[in-house]
Length: 65
Image 1 (cartoon, rainbow, N blue to C red):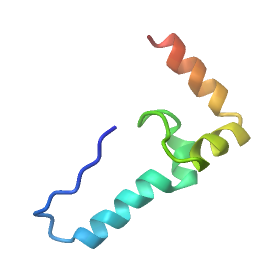
Image 2: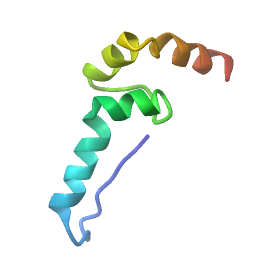
Image 3: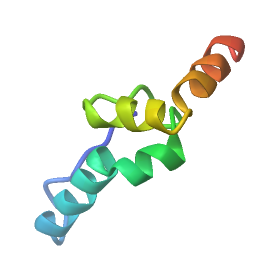
Image 4: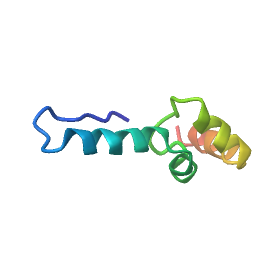
């Protein structure tokens, strides 16, 4: 999934804070799983694996082709 911040945004600091949250929050990663694509940071796959969500999401990804 691609996220962008417009150069014309009214509040770039708040927008970047929201974007960092979306990309880096472990609790959000557990909720979304692979809905936003394959996690790019190191903590998300570990959090999914620790909560038995990684294999389930991989199975869904494989069988949804």
